[in-house]
Image (cartoon, rainbow, N blue to C red; front, side, top):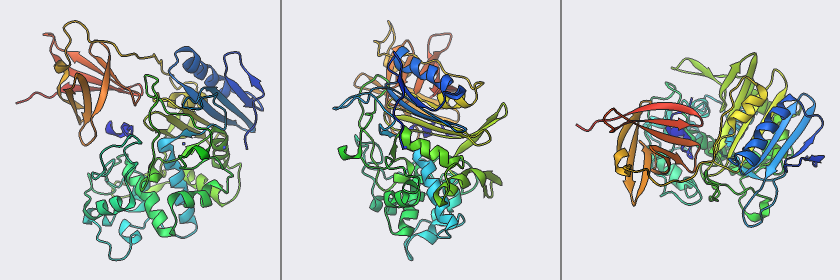
Length: 469
């Protein structure tokens, strides 16, 4: 589905009803009818906010037939901390990509662009674009089959406001002149923030407007999603400050040229409107453009497969088909899940680095396994345990993971990515503070470190240490 590195985007998204009841534990709900999907999610979210305390603040929107409900619990934190509400703004990260795909669908349906348009067709005449990129199509970009890397190789040094904060249009245009693909276009699926960010940039260039202006005009305003934008100033509304795994505040992420990959902030109230549009309850051109991303697959050649624009491959089990996409920044996680057949949808967002995907999918299919979260804390190294024991290269799922140490800290770095500090919490076990991921090192019979298990949002990948020859 995603490469291991793809998580490390890290790093790797609405008319509001007031609450009608506030539970003793502080959770609040606004609903016409608390259906099964609300009850299932309610129990899980209460436990993670108030029990294990692995979520800081959470907001959710539920649509089940004609019923609508909200869940909100926890705090926004930050300088003006207060309780989360359905109108609280959260970073939604890569869930922005669903909006970008909807915008592309809108412009295709208007005849302004075609899915078959190539990058070379959409840049100014005479622009010196790399040969590797010339024939990549919008269809390939929006389905992650373009062959482009996860992110460009000319990103500035990572800023506090995220890896894409200082990456401007001039940087992107420079990159297009010399860029190389990882695989030939249309031959493999490989999740790419660069590719989807480029879709937004090309549509903006074609329309002569910024990505934010274009999205507001074509999708957000028609759906009355007044609280969804890429705005980052204090005037943009109540904001849930991001937090890492340890509960410490992290800087909000900002975007420039690659806004289409993850720039948006939204609210549970606004996302209820998006769900209604996706289910066909809202009418008009924007709603139909959103629906088209789930009803029309794009044929990708020479791969000879079909993909839905932007959406992760639909979850289809137990008589339930769910279109879904999640998002993450340095301290926020989101997920949108749509079950068109049964006219249901769920949006969950939290200002924490722990994943929320299982909450939404379990709400729509109770057979989907829920994860067990634990509150992780930094601990000293065990007796006879040294950081240098873990240093080296590991083959994890066909990808190279480099482990290094500096200043009494351990760092993990997938090839082609940034080095990320990992924190010790048990003998041979470390966790990432800005992502829902862990490293569990293994030893051979002689006690030497021989491998590692990389755990990303509950999914495990075994890795072997690469011997130096």
